[in-house]
Amino acid sequence: MKYKTFILRLEDRSGHLLEVSEIISSHNANITRLSYNKIVDQHAVFVEVYADEENIANLSKELEDNNLLLKQTSPEVDVLVTLQILDIPGVVTNILKVFEKYDVNISYVNTQENDTSYQYCKIGLYATSLELMQKALEQISTFCEIVDINYDTQEHIIDNTVFYHNFAGMMQKTLSLSQKETDIFLNNSNKILQILEDKNENYFKTFNYIRKFAEFTVDYKDEQFNPRISHKIIADNINLYLIEPPCGSNTYIIECDGELLFIDSGFACYEDEMKQFFHVLFPDFDNMNKQIVITHADMDHVGITDIFEDIHVSENTFINFKREHEGKKNFREENPLHEPYIKLDRIISRYNPPELTKLRIIGNKTNNEEFERIGEFKFNELFFDVYESNGGHLKGEIILVEKEKKIVFTGDIFVNVKGFTKEQYDFNLLAPYLMGSVNTDSSKAAACRKILLNKCEDYLLCPGHGTWVQNNND
Image: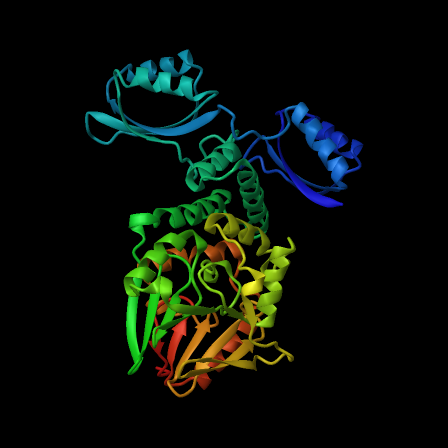
């Protein structure tokens, strides 16, 4: 038995959903989730069913044969155009005649006088094919200047008959997704929408945040990837480096006697860019001994693991990665409020869990206290006490405390919001909105953070996000 979500395109007529329901029932499939919102899309319906694999396969075929599945290859298109119209009689009439000629529908208009000889007119347009749309716009351009053509209509309710189709197509193009990834992306975007409906959030704000999340990671690829890099000497032969990407976690690198210790490694989608910086910082990088400690299993901390033979984690973090390899829900996905965001994150960041054979377990937590010392970790002359928290942010999270040098690597138990770059600040607004909270239990997370700051006075705090800061309790 398994679950499967179908994204269906229904006709705008009475009884069609009933017909689909009867098809589903005929294959002994039980509907476990149904989502439809006419405000967002008049035709798209999300149906999750539970059945055995044979019945699901037969159901899929019948839905396909009856042309009920939403097709991202549909030729329908809607755009938002801005026209500069001469403020004289007859011009608008001529524009409307062109739209009628090519069967282009108007779904949104915003225009008014501005005390000049022309008006700027924003018009939302819908056509059954891109070819018809282009022909209409080409003819209009012969007598009216087209200032802007915007195929991204997420911030305006332009035409909700093809909203999901357009959104899926945009994400497929932005992220270079396969059809399977596109369907998963669309399904989980809809799940986030359902969750936020209970908070009376604006529907299109939800999708706009998802779009921003996807575009943000892409916009800072390649030459646009420009992290903030900091350096600190913590002993005569020990250097500490901090790499802060525009989005994703901090990566810390401790260099000592030609060896490297990493703490966390950011998003997988920036793997190539990050490795270039590793080679700039350490010209002999490929030949250096290197290992990594993972503070917790969130995807924005675990992106680069292939360059390490030894990946040090808590036992709970090991269990989290093992679940992912087995196709089971990880700790985040156990929370239904977090699950759809995590599935989007996996696609957007190109995440894959680290190889289990490379994982080295530091220790395991045995009680429910805010912190428990689960082991120790030695790197040359540095000696770290390793504490696992109560999982307020995420089960399995650890901190590394170097008492002699007074340095603590906090993971996301402490985040230095005041030390964000502008890009980090903008990006870190997205996850809390889409997840409801970045913490598994915010009260537990707050208790751990308070203890950490009180116990580590005068320590150098090395947070999961934001630059390092001296804890002077100011």
